[in-house]
Length: 208
Ligand code: SF4
Image 1 (cartoon, helix red, strand yellow):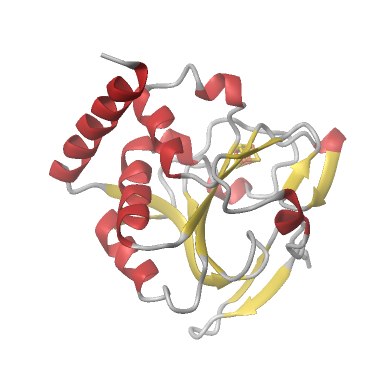
Image 2 (spheres, protein in one colour):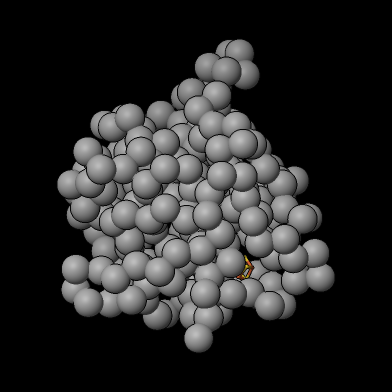
């Protein structure tokens, strides 16, 4: 069996496994529309839970594995589908998405197989670490357009173009976006949600 057909078989096996499972994803927050988390207007999912413990992390509230809320992946997908006429993609951030690989791959599969939305994935794992993670983590990259990988290093802080620190690596896994698209993303935004909540986000969010 060729390498590509073997990879396709493994991906198919994983897909069947996850379809059979009514999976829940633990998230910190879902934002239906954002301008500061990738090119264009995007839905953003911040997953809950990260054990990587980067010094100076600006999302420490996402670290605890037992906080946030659990949501059925298919319900989260429906919330994204409701926005498809208003957004061009979905950004998955955290927390650490690769520490919930089963539900994340199921969400990405649903998005890519049923919509034309792009996917940007942030992870604190470095690309060489991802290669050593389990098959699910590696397989989910086939649904990703842009991967932003690596720990946040506050001594190399950049905070622009979706890059928190200069040690992070950018991988354009499809032709959908280029570096200039990421460089045009505003570093911060303040959103007042329909529920009256003020959300500050972006790679350099406003603090007060
Ligand atoms: S990987 Fe991301 S969420 Fe996790 S500690 Fe580092 S910066 Fe924070």
